Amino acid sequence: MASALINVPAHAKRGDIIEIKTLMSHIMETGYRHTAAGEVVPRNIITSLTCRYNGAEIFRADLFPAIAANPFITFFTVATESGKFDFEWIGDRGFTETASASITVE
Amino acid sequence: MHKPNNSTRRRFLGLAGSAAVIGAVPIVTLRPSEATPAMLASAIRNVVGEAEVRTGKVKLDVPPLVENGNTVPMTVSVSNPMTSDDYVRSIHVFNEKNPQPNIGNFYLGPRAGRAQVSTRIRLADSQKIVAIARLSDGSFWSASVDVVVTLAACTEEVI
Image (cartoon, rainbow over all chains, first blue to last red; front, top):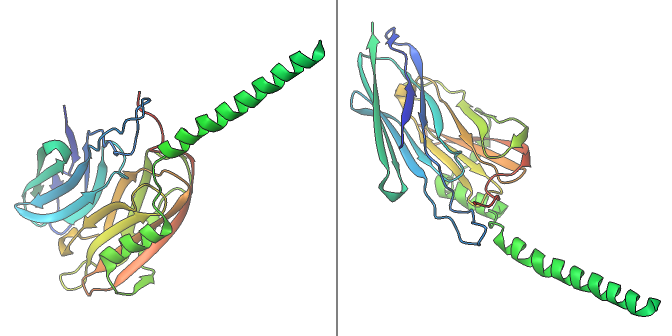
């Protein structure tokens, strides 16, 4: 079962630059590997990750087979207000997964 | 008495040799097709268009010697202020010799605060990696790194 790990600081001062770390467990099958019988293993990857901060998109990534299994992606944002980060992963075979984290900004 | 023995040995060696050659052919065809420098150039053109790509501003951190190509830590940072009228719009990472030239596209904005993205990537061979940043004024900046990979990703068989 797919599962996400997210690391967002619980508290921050207004205007602080904070780091957001995301890890999603996923095989990220490239579609370029073969079985011993010579058949191609079909591609099964996460194609995008979107992060919204109180509804506004602050980060988006397009992923390709060259991203390692269990995609680990980190990025930064400015803590502007208390609220919620919503993360959404979308992938092949109808894969979607969401997660969220809240932050208190003083 | 020696002659027949010798000829069977010779025939055996000949057969073994040709079997090795025949055996080698499917292995070659099973290898994933490599992206070529031309594919890298066209993938970059798809993002950049006709704009000029200048070297600088971008810092691409990848270990120069990689033992396991299946998971290679990579950090791209752009030394540019992140203000509402001057910021990094996106970061694009490419490779030369994986089956596909793209690694990832990362879309940032003025709210990012710091133009820096980290992830873990796969490398199928020793090759060049290119990171290109697009700024809000429409200019493109790039950095490239040559990486030596000992154990390649993607080529192993699935049981």
